[in-house]
Length: 460
Ligand code: NAP
Image 1 (cartoon, rainbow, N blue to C red):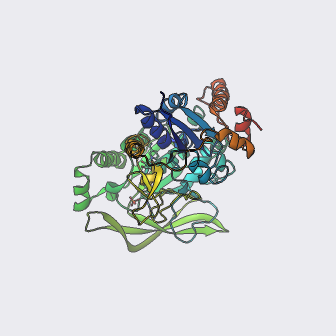
Image 2 (image 1 turned 180 degrees about the vertical axis):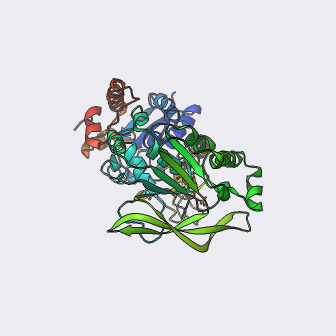
Image 3 (image 1 turned 135 degrees about the horizontal axis):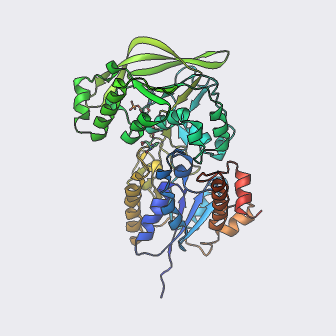
């Protein structure tokens, strides 16, 4: 007698979704997994977030491709929960539902001028250069010499690096063609990264920070005075190897002679933006206030304004102060934390209550917030999958098992949804890589949904 597989829908085919699929497939229990993804192409941030010049990080997609090829896994690209399928559709068809929806929005600064032309969220810039179809029509004015990037995380680093990398280097990557064309005409010469706290508190990982030291035509610089640490900061980095390495890298930048390149990345610390300044409705600078660090009871060093203000001129401002989860229709959402409320990965009905939503789970950024590198999602997903196994053993499921359990294709057909299956993605992938090969690039990405669907041969 064969046991019928547990039917599982994973919403989101990014790193968190794939690591959840991997953990599920590793267990002995038979499973049938449907991966439902709002964009036609899979791989989420590996495709649309990781910078195009970091192909080594993107190589994890090979692991995902192998998982996608498994017989137990079906793929439904270009299918949006809340638009093409409802939660009720899923609850009546699956035993378990996993939300792997990431963090689809950005945090705001909440300062005057934030929405002036020329002030953009990093998420939009990253989506634009990575050919994410939602950001295809964004425009960034690169006809200026000074750019300010607010934030001290790896996204801020990616943004700064893409702005100063030589276009010829970018032309060997899978950067979106429209972004490459714009960057070829760019007049940007100086990119200043602003940290509201000190160098000891920056969230960069060290290889990313160090990379500026070896980019052709680019100098990295920082004022040595801004690297002086107070006692609490010195103690803070003492047992943090990454931050110690970051301090050494920054000290190296402070001591280095100016290079002969014409592009500069400057790090500034202990400054908070207080107003985006505009002229004729467009960004021309940012007013920043000097901060000092104030230790909190839990040891966290908070930035506090000193009242000393200066204005940094810039023609483009990128706010890279973190991503934020966005609510999915029908799925509980914790407004404050910007995540799906959960207990170790089991979805909770309310942010502040213990009631569990049976058979529904969350992984990745939607579970813990937008932090960690791609690999962080592996252990995170394994934790959720262990709870899923426990619940399966206890007979807890998302809803009714019905005979319609595997009829998602027919439901989508009836609704006139053009979805992309595995074979469709393979066709799209082959077109992109063939176009890339002809130009000595890993791939040339489609950046509009209709052209993706055509290449995939998605049925009308
Ligand atoms: P992040 O690492 O959380 O950095 C956000 C930065 O924004 C922090 O420096 C934070 O400062 C600052 N910030 C927040 N609110 C601010 C405000 N109001 N004013 C000024 N600064 C403010 O986030 P991220 O850079 O978006 O990256 C998200 C995750 O993806 C991270 O885990 C990152 O490592 C990962 N990632 C990895 C790579 C890679 O491995 N190559 C590439 C890209 C992203 P405070 O510390 O003071 O809060």
